[in-house]
Every structure is written in C-alpha cells, then in structure tokens.
Image (cartoon, rainbow, N blue to C red; front, side):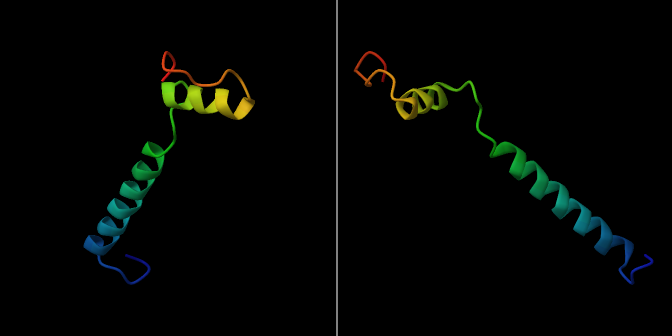
Length: 54
C-alpha cells in the first residue's frame, strides 16, 4: 500500500473499522420500543406507572 502497510494489514484495518461502525449502529435505541415509550412518558410527567402499564 502507499502508506507502507501490506495489503493484509490494510484489509484487517478495514474489517476493524466496519465492525466498529456496525457495533455503533446496533446501539441506537429503537424510538418505538415499549421501554422507550414508557421512559418518554415518565420523563414527560405523564401518568404514573401502574401494574397495567408495566
């Protein structure tokens, strides 16, 4: 490679970068998940959680 790395080293670096990007994308919470909606209701000061909503 032009920066002094072998092709194998460059491929491993690219694989590591792609794996990190995929890991970050999976950590984004689902905005429509039941847990997220309950959290938003609690933060907004909505109805208190009851056994029916838990």
